[in-house]
Length: 388
Image (cartoon, rainbow, N blue to C red; front, side, top):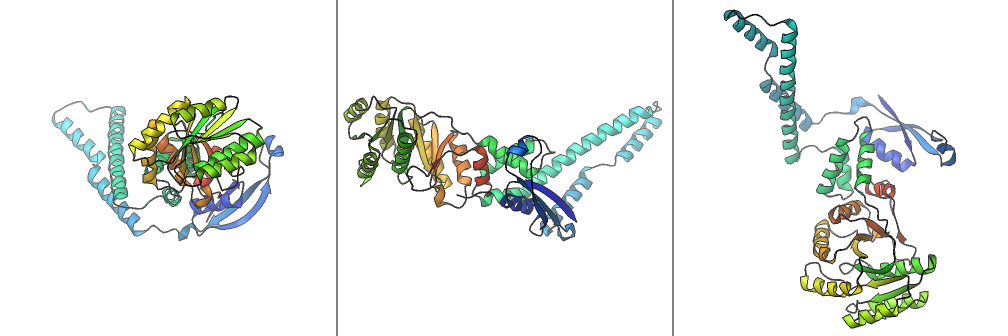
């Protein structure tokens, strides 16, 4: 019988860790609310102590694992020479050649060197077998399966597990993975000011995001905000943003030419922030991206945000980010978290873009469904401990 205690913030977190570490046959023996140790514990909310147990006799090694063990045993048998026999042969040869027999300390040192060499060879053989097993679709670890279920791509999973392996082995494996995920998250410390441009493909929610940002700064932070749109291609986009501007009583301009852009920016010189909504462009159409870039250069700003939907396929995310690199975006906004049930795409997008995360959107409400997430919150979403 294996019995373990967990100190967690919620029963969902406890269940995740119990299933991961003890398996689906584990049962909860007891649970109680406790205060965390130290002075801080008196001022923070209570944690939950959960005790769980599992009968380890139920844990059976599957056929593929048995087969792997047999292969390793055979490999070790074939690769590992009999050290004692080697020493006897060496001693006999020395007697024949009438060489002086080495001292006991020297023999022990030699044996230790031989053992170290053999252990290194065994390690190489085992690593080789493990790599071959993984390549051939062999048994995956529980944590890898969990990450895959939450839609993390193979590249991101490898980075997480590599970081986890480099951490202190005395730390629980699940906690090492959590630490690794947090280290991969770059949270933006951007201060929205002057001119801000939002770019991205069609359908990711740029216009609604611009409206949410305008509402946050104008209605909540009481800043003077201006709105400009160059999205004159999409039916209803101008009317939608103009309606938001009227509701919030902020200036609004529609831009068609570069001269219009110059005039619009001049008319909003007294604004604290000018938000610019752009036309959605295909990342594969270089001429359209180049046309968009001429408008952005006219704004003379470095505050360029790439908007990407969390529901976008992983391969498409790569293509979008590669296509929009020419615009020199420096932050990422991830939208539509309310339209997905798994959140691994957050980490996939940040890893591919290699840019910090500014905001996420979690619905259609303006401006409420615009949020900044901490690395802890993102980690919980990625691991399935929390949902939107």
